Image (cartoon, rainbow, N blue to C red; front, side):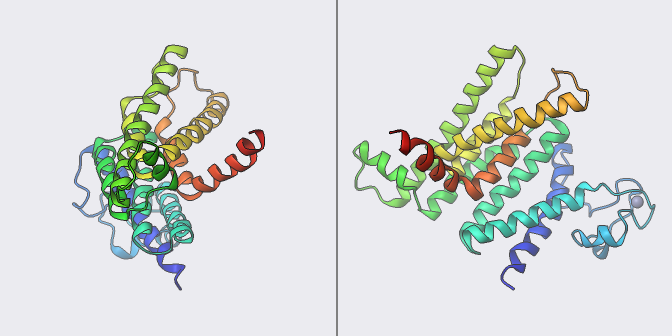
Length: 278
Ligand SMILES: [Zn+2]
């Protein structure tokens, strides 16, 4: 039973994320009017708006005009549900789940908005930075690395809340700064703007939530995903090499992977690659 709750919460939130993905870039209200069919404007009754289930029962078509409903709606719902469930296995169902699931939900929204419009709205990224810093201050669970680093700077007596807040703030600065560096290098190497300032703000948000080391890992995995998937797409979809990749979408996917498995990845890397070579 405990497993069903984060899954169902995830599915319901996913349904809401679909609305945010559509309306936020258009500058429309998230709460009003009620959801309606994009083609015939029919208001969607609650029983046609049950995550995934309604899509299946309706055969992927609107009850009013019988036009096709995008497969993306149930996919976003399923994805958010699965993320909710995986977060439960990592964090249990408490404050940490709420914080890191909300963070992941924000990343899902950013991923799809970047895919659709090549923008990453400030409403999410800039607010996310402050929410990330405050959430870490509230959790007051600084990483052992942050504690050790502060000690080397002579900060011995600081309490865990102060350390967590500081580490989060530093994570935001370094996360954004690293990506700004990558963007500059990319611009000089290829002569085209590979990413905008939106990506920088988004990585500041990731750094605020996850801290500097995991922000770095997110950039590494995101760049790898972007290179492999992006190049394959350009090759097989016949796009030009100047095709603008949604780098934010890849960073968002990487961010969710890192929330779930970042610590394990770092430990694996240190134990297998760094230690044996020392
Ligand atoms: Zn319709």
